[in-house]
Image (cartoon, rainbow, N blue to C red; front, side):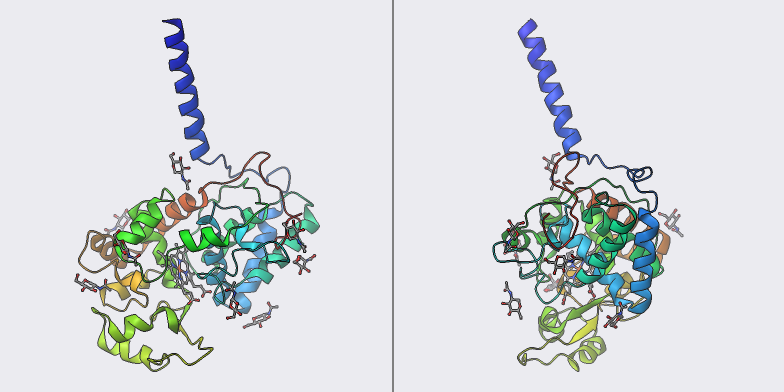
Length: 320
Ligand code: HEM
Ligand SMILES: *[C@@H]1O[C@H](CO)[C@@H](O)[C@H](O)[C@H]1NC(C)=O
Ligand SMILES: *[C@@H]1O[C@H](CO)[C@@H](O)[C@H](O)[C@H]1NC(C)=O
Ligand SMILES: *[C@@H]1O[C@H](CO)[C@@H](O)[C@H](O)[C@H]1NC(C)=O
Ligand SMILES: *[C@@H]1O[C@H](CO)[C@@H](O)[C@H](O)[C@H]1NC(C)=O
Ligand SMILES: *[C@@H]1O[C@H](CO)[C@@H](O)[C@H](O)[C@H]1NC(C)=O
Ligand SMILES: *[C@@H]1O[C@H](CO)[C@@H](O)[C@H](O)[C@H]1NC(C)=O
Ligand SMILES: *[C@@H]1O[C@H](CO)[C@@H](O)[C@H](O)[C@H]1NC(C)=O
Ligand SMILES: *[C@@H]1O[C@H](CO)[C@@H](O)[C@H](O)[C@H]1NC(C)=O
């Protein structure tokens, strides 16, 4: 009986520990005493970068996503290749596509100047993503903090875990579920495609071969995206054709009018259970804003390294 009771309480304890490991131990006030100027320093730098080039807001938001989906939000995406380390930047979804690394290095330099060895690169990415959305007119939210930086990166895991634009809804749902994110998170987070740009190679099949698609939208995109790729082709188009640099809900109205740029966008509104969420976000901007904020916090909670795990990198591009 005693053995039974203690094994039961051990089971409860282990279950509780697992639950707390799965829920991030992050906190909104993490830097309040150790670096009270951390958040304002990041915000000023992000605002300056976005005011200089609005696309940078999109690029910084995407960096946080591509960080979190690969072994958690641990700034692994920022580690540059060197003689031995094969990082994530050369992985298929990232190579020639991710941007903003020098902006992050610049933010880190400013943060190190006010608080040496204190603020992680992973937290900088999470805060910069929020500040980018705000700078482009989108919602704000409280960013949970206390992530630490990885000492490794994985090109293999980046290619395994980052969803490609060819995915159907079932594949996208599975990819997000694998990170403990729901279908509601998927639909809300995809609204990030209300800003930023995509290369022709990522939507060529859709604008030439796919239905449903608005005919005039397809024609206008074809003008700058030839059917056959010339070498070195990197022609860009806005992900949100209506208001490309505003963080608003026009992405969803575009889906309703069959003007999603990527296949993985349009599958969210193509006769399935997610149609009603898309219609709701298209007609109710505040419903989108609050769902996006909630989903960003959920994404930021993916497998953070906390406590004494990992390190606080001094230079975001390399291990200490
Ligand atoms: C649902 C699965 C997703 C797929 C398949 C996907 C795919 C893509 C692709 C193919 C591009 C264009 C890259 C290029 O051509 O260089 C892109 C751009 C972008 N993605 Fe996603 N994405 C997804 C989810 C997300 C999420 C969750 C976020 C952030 C919360 C996000 C933020 C962005 C942003 C902001 C851009 C534009 C970046 C820039 O202009 O530099 N995406 N995405
Ligand atoms: C401003 O943006 C341009 C691209 O539009 C870039 O070449 C330049 O380096 C940026 N300047 C600063 C100070 O970030
Ligand atoms: C590359 O980074 C790895 C991981 O931090 C480190 O062990 C190695 O010494 C670095 N190599 C070079 C050539 O800097
Ligand atoms: C990334 O792209 C560049 C230029 O397109 C190419 O030279 C390089 O080999 C690619 N890197 C990897 C790791 O595939
Ligand atoms: C999507 O998932 C289905 C069912 O698991 C699978 O048959 C299909 O190959 C996947 N598609 C892609 C593009 O990975
Ligand atoms: C998802 O949750 C499960 C159960 O709580 C946990 O074991 C797993 O590590 C979590 N996965 C991620 C990527 O956070
Ligand atoms: C939409 O659904 C139809 C019917 O299932 C399918 O043929 C088409 O490929 C789908 N298109 C997109 C963009 O999901
Ligand atoms: C829009 O969504 C918000 C937040 O979910 C909700 O409170 C509000 O009632 C909705 N407005 C309309 C007109 O449906
Ligand atoms: C950070 O590390 C990268 C990659 O090793 C290097 O190119 C860069 O100069 C370093 N930046 C600073 C400020 O030391």
